[in-house]
Image (cartoon, rainbow, N blue to C red):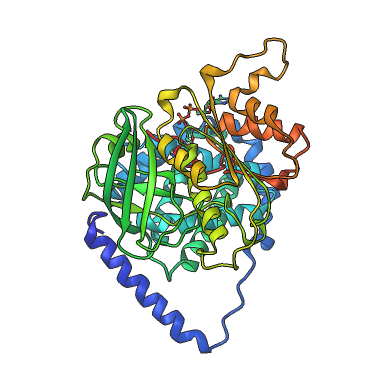
Length: 437
Ligand SMILES: NC(=O)C1=CN([C@@H]2O[C@H](COP(=O)(O)OP(=O)(O)OC[C@H]3O[C@@H](n4cnc5c(N)ncnc54)[C@H](O)[C@@H]3O)[C@@H](O)[C@H]2O)C=CC1
């Protein structure tokens, strides 16, 4: 298989192109009916069996260590598909196991999640044969971790669960055959706005499909196969440039590489864009509430650009119509942390229907006798400032801030379908910017 570098990916690209060609040429023939794997799988039965014996293999740290040891010992060439540091990978796999086991009684939902994961995994260069190696290593690791009380029937349940997830991943990857597994982009600007924060502009080499408010996995050339999620901080633009707001959370991680080690001219790789925190055509005349904490401002900025383009009718969608108002709350711990103040001021000056409220932690005096004071200052300021139940809300920032704001808005009568935010916590993928070291 060689390395995960250019040659291997070029080979995969040729293989995908051949499969796509065969698919297109075969289009005249009636496609074979797809079996509905989710409807055929009795996930609830496997869930019961796996759960009954779960204490033998949890916490998953040992199981996962044995699994990777076994896999890399038997197939050393697979090591190059993984990043140098496996820490994040281990956490990610433990999350995936927990998600699977807890949701196996809802196979359709699990299948949808894993189809998306399969789509996203194309960028790693993963092929179906790799999943077979993973399965063999998992069986060895289960036996080694569980010891003599392990039962064959439980292992079979684990294998069925894994094959179900893998079948969904392969389906997701196949459905995306017409698009590149990842996109390359050259850094055209790198502005250090704070010692720990940079704003990057990246020009994609090929058209990159995404919508304002979405996020994508990003890889730095300094840390191959270590991908972290960040929001696209600008709406799609004709010049093919995108922006990212990256905060370094510690030394030696991907965010550190992007903030401290990246220069103009470097080439980054992006995975496909995901996320449902987007504006839709039917939202254009609605009043919007936008709440951004810290670098959670990145997708909100993209959404505002999208909103402004829709108002002007330059988004290529429906003709312009009288837009609703936008109330934007931007939270930061202190004045020095407001890293995009000039852009905020410019937006506020340009749009009469946009009202901007900056909320600084240090300006807020907590009310000690308020039972909800623990919710945090930004959420409190939002709740204090108005009645929002008729608005459509977009909330982005630290998970605790998003949770607190959503709780406040819900308590004030805002229905769940009036609020858009990335999942908190996300079942499988750490959301944009999270786990960024
Ligand atoms: N970089 C990106 O593209 C994106 C990043 N994010 C997430 O946004 C977060 C941004 O972090 P920072 O910039 O360090 O924000 P921060 O820690 O400086 O806080 C920003 C705001 O959130 C509030 N806040 C912080 N912790 C809170 C808590 N426990 N409860 C209630 N409110 C709280 C603060 O009061 C402040 O107003 C990260 O968790 C990141 O994962 C989200 C979307 C995109």
